[in-house]
Amino acid sequence: DDPVNGLFETLDMEEKGHVNAYQLASYADEMAAEDGNYELHVDDMRRAILAVNMALPHLSPPGAPEELSLLGMQWMMRTSELDVIVGAETASTLGDLRDRLVTQVAKKTIAQKNMVRTQDLDSGNPHQQRAILEPLSALVIFVNAVCIGMSL
Image (cartoon, rainbow, N blue to C red; front, side, top):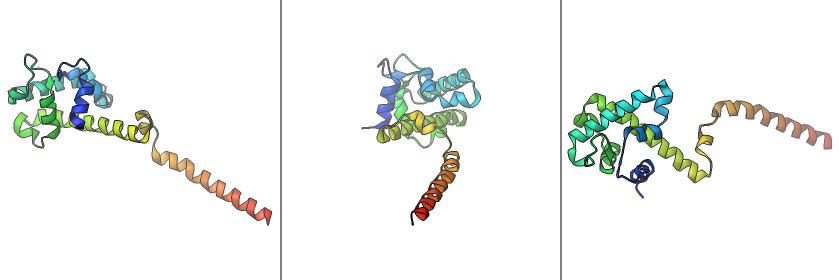
């Protein structure tokens, strides 16, 4: 079971065999949350997809130069030298996208394996939770010691 194929199937809801910049941006939604400029990220992705398809036309879906095929996604997710093929700016956009997609896939996988919701993985700061639980644990231990002492 290839995670890239699974990711692509998730993105390709219409089962066209290729995905567009909006589908990628919607799945990797954290990008827009950082600076609030969703449309700018979609345009950057559209340009990056076009650059990949122009540099590697054999990966381009026929008749859809602004969309990413499964082969294009596999190449993007697996290649280590994006900048050599598509240039530094496009490589930066694709690298950010790849990182966000991998993060989303990892969250989904971890949530499934642990039988929790993905939102549960994002909730709260573990240091903040520890700051609450440590004094509470100390109080329980103290009460336990007092009860044991009183029973003697």
